[in-house]
Image (cartoon, rainbow, N blue to C red; front, side, top):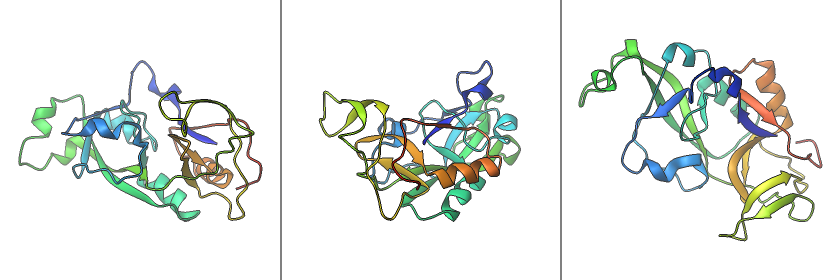
Length: 203
């Protein structure tokens, strides 16, 4: 299953959170690469912290997979996956950012929300089935898929980790069936699970 976001919780907003840009941020859009990202600690995003307090997987303008501590712990409890967790702090966009993020000062805790991480996967699976999947190859790189209509994975005796990405189609996180069940059972908020084709075996 592709791990997507629940856009129904956006309401009239374009995004739940927007990155407070830092030098070099452009290279991190989508988290499609496995080389560990160099980012400030923490990375700040602006949003309505009262709403974000109730969401585990918030949609954002740079498509970072930002997870609450609770959501990440659930996934990690199901199995290992090599990743980097970049601390994220939300700052309240109902106040001027400059009044919260004053240079050299610790942000006022009354206007910030901690307990989130941007999760970058540091490995990618080669389980994409090139023969049975339906897709369009990237015109820039024949080893990458540009559009995916039907996904089938090659069999793995070890199964799939709870969270993974495909080297041929690295723009989305995928989750195992066990991960979907665990996240749904826990009532994690902000996720959607999008089936694309079917898996050949139960992860």
